[in-house]
Image (cartoon, rainbow, N blue to C red; front, top):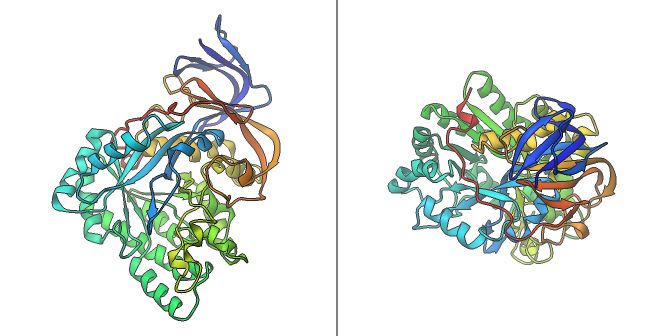
Length: 465
């Protein structure tokens, strides 16, 4: 049956207007005023905003840190309730396996038939043997044309040296594979961590002291130079500080194809959260570390002025009681705390409440940052837009809702929220995934396995100028 969404204010990256949307099957077939369709189910969106389903290009359902693993796709209904209909998961290459092989093996066991929103994958190269470098173009052929390398985490199997990054950039550009980097100087962090621990400074707050803005700025600059030598685009994930932002902005302004994202928690939390009593600060250990208010202000300006082109969640679902306490006790330190923040469900809620409602983002800019641009960056040509021919991933957003964010109402499968107690203005009331209603009255009504694997196209927007 066709669906006709009437009387809402349709918001796109280009602007907004009162319009109707006609859905037939899994696709949008028309957007305009006064649409009619005999026999269609009519959904009245009067007084509501109609947004494209969000594309979250940075989630970790399979991340393992010192033996501790995050929650998986069985919690992806949290994305749906939060207005996100497409997820892109980072899959660490298994030692001894190929890049594509690792993704295919993982998706068959951990995502297919489980995911409740649509999904695809980034490869994370961890084993840069010559034959693996040569395999990078096959990522484009397989529909996974994005790959990340970690400059941080010295001593971990997923750490990448400069030679691996340079070779990946050179090989990736041959077939339009976008190379992403987690930019922090691993050696700086390693030295600082050892010194702090030796001085007995082991609590969660010292996580931020061990990786100050300079470690991110240096690695960002180095990554940009590596990309310049390769004559390839590069994407800097989770930019958090004004110094790293300055490197991205300067490179972009001199004509280099350098792009980046930030994440919702870097826009509303700060390093003082790491100093919370009763070991509560462990909840806020993520990398790069939380910064101070001046850096938050710089990030808001950057996303508003398009110096950064996406806001992701960097969702990483570790429990506080069980996993975040791995750094507590004799012989332990902040370096043993699993990194990451569970923020899948509240990305849009945070951006609307603290961005749109406070005048830091227009509604159209929010749509671009949370849906349209991430789809373009990652070659998802039917996602992130409300236009004929695009997937009918649609969010009807109620701006009048008022509430408080709490882990008690969270579907992420973990025992805390980094946004606990935050005021929430507005919420996704109804969500469609390819024309199927999966959220109604802000409650998940879909089913396990509703999500489909989406193959992406190479030469995403980072290759375009």
